[in-house]
Image (cartoon, rainbow, N blue to C red; front, top):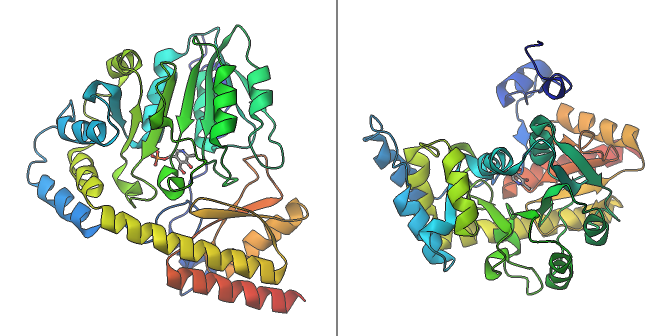
Length: 365
Ligand SMILES: Cc1ncc(COP(=O)(O)O)c(C=O)c1O
């Protein structure tokens, strides 16, 4: 009997992102900025840091396994019961628990071909059959996804807004789609970038719906600037949550993460500052791309994806930027080799990126 199952053996080895200090050292650079992981460059609210620090005094104790305070606050916020809320080590942690809870060996998954890579990795690791549906003009093709449902389909994964395209589907599109999904199919609606899009009137905020076969995933990693804490949550019918709770690691997320997240929910002013800064940065980058004639995908999130004429140009751009101290994401593994994703930075990071961009286009013209 081989020690490693075939589907795990087939997975490519994970390539860790190099720490900034190593890149600086290797390339002899004074300044390096990270615009590759869609993090919030402003960091967490000072109230979050204070709350997390305070919780450290009790870190000889295990965290509250029922995460009562954070789950109650989330329930209150979304007009739900605590039994509708589950937490995890990031929303990816909840996603992983969903796969472990609901997938049997004969089940099939459906997702979009170029969407969030974290889900693709979990899907591959699950060993079940996958059906990746091509995108249309870098957007979800919900009709094609609905058409792909068959008797084996167990889970459909949708990210709205999507990473890395930055696009979203509307209320009308979502309503039409859900009509075609049978009750026996679980829809994972990943709303990691929800806060950036919540003001748009045609955005289908899934917490306004009550589908028994839908689970909403959200996170404190993006707009709340808490990626390093690793805390995310799922909202769904209590029947699904109860089954997820059987699988979830008892003490995830950590006590500082729980305390920090409660403080983050209370600090709406700080969240607004983050969102305003992001909107300004996104507008500035879009204007710059237009001036320089660079093609980009319109985004409602904290990142923008540039589209080059081919993989070679995208790779060259990413490499040149790295040598100038800007870390970007070339989207080869997403099946978008012609694309490079850029996270909106803090104001001074955006300026630095734009300086490099202008200098590069001068040098190459
Ligand atoms: C669409 C999407 N979902 C989930 C995640 C993971 O978020 P978390 O840090 O909560 O695990 C990301 C992170 O980039 C994402 O882009």
